Length: 369
Ligand code: GTP
Ligand code: MG
Image (cartoon, rainbow, N blue to C red; front, top):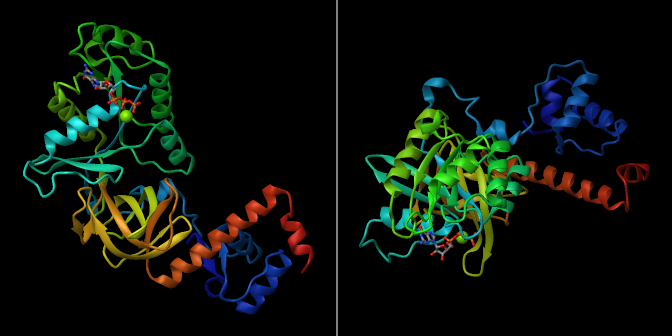
């Protein structure tokens, strides 16, 4: 539990709920029986009773991991890839060329709906999920929220321009996140392209190419002329195999909010990247301080779907607000639980705001009791 109600806690330590309420008030926490207390407070209380109450915090990275899953329930999942690189080095062009070469021609409409993430089908069951983060800022913001959304970073470096400040920034981001990098040396169609120089510059930054005895995969490509794209896809699948990515499709879904917005016609719309489990229509989802029953789901092409397994980005309708990018999205048992957790989170946010604004500290609040 991230949070537990006073009543449930009382049950867990075999005490009367009223006694717990009294204890809480002594600790400076105003509470009633139905109220949810956070993990920190519950731990404090459990200490008081010398009880062994295991209250695990909803740690983002832990929840997205498969640590709680039984080994035999785990199945291979597709890699989730983010394209990064310096301005104008060809990130958007690469994503476009990947998508258009994979999109089956003659599909209804032909225009792909933009949901900030794409599933690319390579055929024979091979898929790659691409995250279209609008830049390094989004990546950093997501990481700051504890979200680990990427398995592999594709570092795009223009062969005519070489390593630039944002190239280095991207390397640092990927390294800090512990995500392996595949280098895509782009614009090799240009007469002044110098892929060797890119390799040299990056080798100095710990990205030693395989052909020089290192472990970093380099792919020469032209996003514009569509050269080397298939090879790049193969290299991504190879890296994914090395990473041995697994998930349990049988469990309740967990993932990360990639983006969310208020749509005039459809209301609150969230793009969620499912990372473990399967998200289904009708599930109750909490995302940040928002929650709701999944009313409808759409894939990256805007096609309605009823369920989404691991490594699948989906657009979700039914959540009662717009969670922030990087927020954890998790399916819970029922609406009551969802409401309780969200209320507790909101209170936490409110308290932090009050404290940080310096208008009123928590002590001030409690001194009025
Ligand atoms: P930002 O989003 O602004 O950071 O740029 P980006 O990295 O997304 O680059 P984008 O794909 O917009 O490409 C920048 C310019 O480079 C465009 O004019 C592209 O047409 C051009 N370009 C991209 N890839 C290639 C390539 O392989 N060869 C050549 N010759 N031009 C390319
Ligand atoms: Mg771009």
